[in-house]
Length: 143
Image (cartoon, rainbow, N blue to C red; front, top):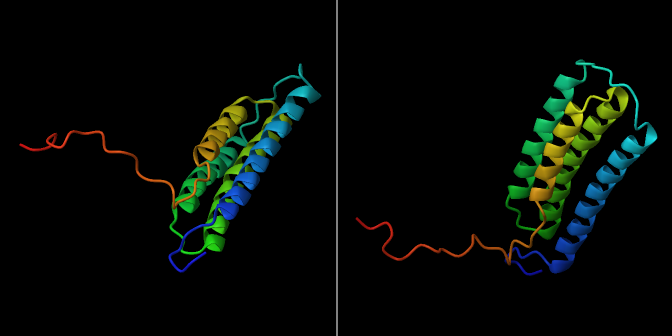
């Protein structure tokens, strides 16, 4: 790494490995929940609903906040991404535990929304990414 703040590909690959491990853990736990008692009775318990949604919102906003932060060093970039991913993963796991305890599928939907937010923040090398190609014609916004 030079002084220009570039992120080496090895750091990006390490964060990707952690990213996929967190997602795999959440998916495996969800599978275990559905395999333990497939025909059990749903117990409506709204005591867990507010904390589950609140933590999920914090995880969703946290994953976007931390992964969009600019970092000058590879260590800081990796730390920001791992913290953001851990926030979302914690929200997913908490809602899956609430699903396991009560069986209310609302928690599955909340965990799914958190999982989508986590997946949408796939780690990309900031040196290689761009805002995309401008497909507008040169005179599109001229009066």
